[in-house]
Length: 195
Image (cartoon, rainbow, N blue to C red; front, top):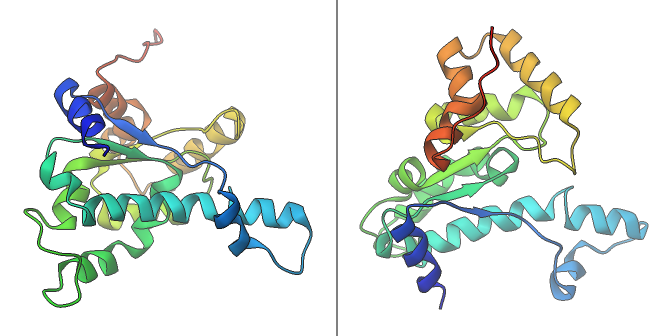
């Protein structure tokens, strides 16, 4: 039923950002336990549930053949890839099995990840996730993001400075993540600060 949305986004050559939201009452049940309600709320949202839900949604779009029907569809997901980069190789393997896999697709999940998915750093302030991402995701598919107002710009800047100081990326790669990838995908130009 959403094919009209995917078709229009593809026709306009614009990305769709899949952002998490609060769990439904039915989904929230799985986060309840012998702890305070604020723990339940956090586990269902930014502490875990948001991320696993969006990651699963991307996999379901693939399994439903959305990327076969709309090969130019562009999807952005946040929070360092919503848990997918950590399990990506496993998902590649499971989705492509001829028996017990996710059905025949024109393009494997690896190709869809490389051609249709962009991820943002949004609010995940450590180097371990980006190191994992760099093992299985092309640098031109990663975009810096803060996740304001949920995260502070100061924390975002401190993280980017830590990334720069780490030496795991060269200057060109840092620029791609900082703004060039977003400029290309969104067809905008970031303001330039005179030297």
